[in-house]
Amino acid sequence: MAQDPIVLIIRMLGEMYAFIIILRFLLQLSHADYYNPISQAIAKLTNVPVVAISRAVPRIGKFDLSALLYATVVKLATLLLIVMVSGMNMPNIAQLLVLAIVGVVNGILEIYFWAVLGSVIISWVAPGSYHPGPQLIQQVTQPLFKLVQKVIPPIGGLDLSPIFIFLAITIIQSQLGRFVY
Image (cartoon, rainbow, N blue to C red; front, side):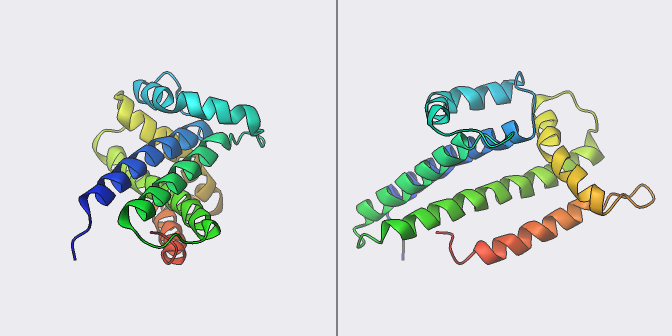
């Protein structure tokens, strides 16, 4: 059965914008270079609503939860639009909120999965690249690598942390899989 093209467009646009918002959170979390052109573009695309939300939502340490809250709102709005356009019965708002939160967590995991994979490839092909893309990927993944390397240090120059990161992401996503829309 084919899906309605309007539902596909709503879902694609909502997912893309939520991806950008989640990426903003991860860039802030990893203290990535704010003056990188890609960081600047992400900040410009999300600045107005995130700054407005940040006035109402306090920071928790170095975590600025306003971007995550905004990403959850975007996911929730996307779900509501999909339900309304497709003509389904309106589910409980709590169920939609849980789906939106799980969608944001899954988005974080997806970004980390592909960023770690990109970081591994970059370390083989173009280590120390000055291009803004690889620099951001390295900056986002470096704190995660360091966290895992505290538990499992490199063995004879071989860094096994990406394998354990992939394993952890896969396990968490398998548990979230029943909730993701």
